[in-house]
Image (tube, rainbow, N blue to C red; front, top):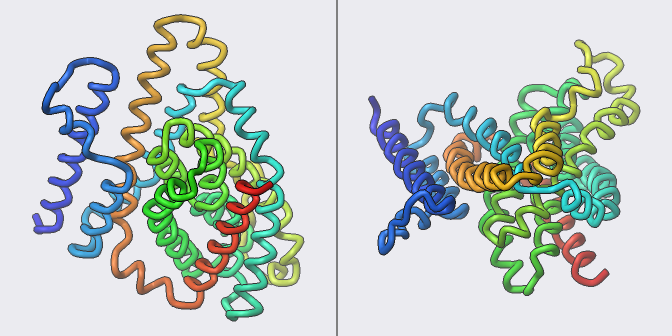
Length: 341
């Protein structure tokens, strides 16, 4: 076994054990007393930082496993968060961010085309994929829109790389900015859901700011993610000529909706109409939700561990510049709207 594989296993084991101890303390299974720090030292930024340091210092380790965990663990964890929410709170959070969601989605797609194609000369597929990922929900949007425009593998990889890099940066800088601006939990959760690409980073940043911010961020982001369907449906009309000679068939529009979003909604409904009616049900729902939060933290390590030097090199300068410029505009614009409107 290689050295990087051993270090990877040790890091995952230490993080997993610490988060397990923290979960056991949360549900009052036992109390570590003066050693309680053993279950509380791992936060979202720390998990991501350890993953990034490992990836940049040692490269890849168990790439297939890491890729699966960074995606699936996060999705299952988001479903788990649904057991800690009610339909009433979800609707309230989603409706408050609806107007800015609609404006920002289509505004981002238009602005991304302007910056990518007109200013930087990025190829149309890569430019549109980056714009879609920024507008909706990062990697999930890119994965859904890619087949619709018959995107090349290289374009998909570059777009995913750009989104991945910016997600990692957002996890570090958003919570301190929120505190510096004295944002409320509601304000920060809404801002994170709009300005940060992937659901994983949105949930992680929200959790770093507070439980209420995490609940708001998760709901608004997953409401926003449903716009994948709309974008997938209208995209072929914008690229009719380019797609006319493309080979292959587009997937049905309904397959553009990530399955975990539907299960997240099911979890909310189950908690609202079944579990919340019983004391044991409330305890069970709360326990699942707390476990999900710890697993989200662990998933951030896997996300960071995937950002290797090879990934950074593959992205290239122009697509990264497009992603950064688009991200800055959307972040500042949405922040100004939330604070002053």
